[in-house]
View 1 (cartoon, rainbow, N blue to C red):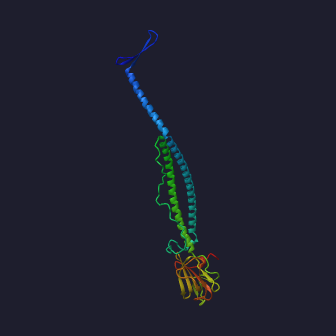
View 2: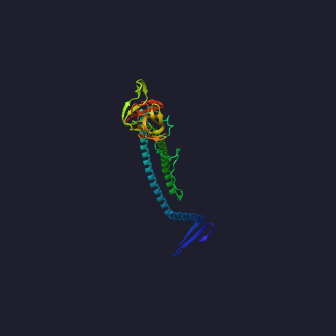
View 3: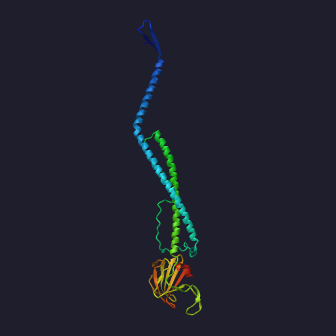
Length: 335
């Protein structure tokens, strides 16, 4: 081999006489080959390192894959529960609409004309059990998010999984937010219906609806001949005749506001039922109720007698709405 400054000359000789092969290699070729060899070696080393790194990360990838599958299964479960919640909300909505119809129909019935509950709702003694519970849902709508863990090993595979996961979570979050808003609106609506129905129930309990005693009607409400003078006079109540000592019942829930003796009425009991409604029970032989006592429908408050201006044992029963005497027969449903 010889070098002349630019080229390398390689002489190849054979054992055969006179046969020689000459090979010339430029110096620039050798430099290029060295550069390409270096680049190839670097690339090869890089590939080997990446391959080794992937082999080392394989267990982590398997763990990420397992967690991702677990997350997908959880999301599917959440979606099934969300579907069930949406179905239940639909049923509650239909039930609420039915209750609204019933309430509207009921409010237009004959009892609505007796008194206006909201106008006379200042009386707070009408007994009823409040079954309502505080709402666990805030009035202000809250956005509900599904939160995923970001402490996994970053890689193109994980990034792709995360993007797909984000899309699923965004859709699920929107559905949950909408379900929460519907739940809050439905809860407020149902609570309003419950308050309305509770108030209506209180009104029903406070409305006289039964006879104050067992017996027969001896004198009705209206103009009649006075039994003592024979002159036409206004009879402001209903007389129910019965044996002396027959129990007298409160005809609705309320509070006893007066117990005593009055001219004409004799021993009298007055019960205030709220909503502008009062009942009076006169000519009693005995009085068992006391002022301030809360009574319910069918509670015994006195016994029939003939005290005061009376011609025989009976109870004089009055119903007054806003201070005006009305016909008690309209408030007796148990004929």
